Image 1: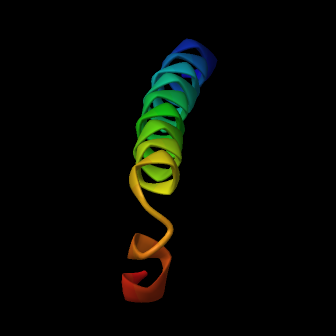
Image 2: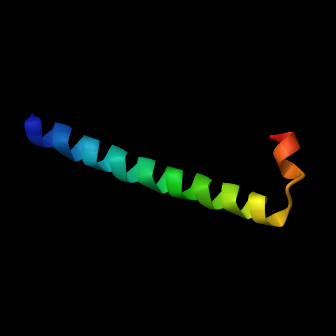
Length: 41
């Protein structure tokens, strides 16, 4: 039972890291492209 919980939490953390990395890249790209996009967000 504990092994399953650990495995699930590790997968969740890895997925969360990937999502955060993707969001960070998008934010940095938008910031570099133009400051006008900040008004839309």
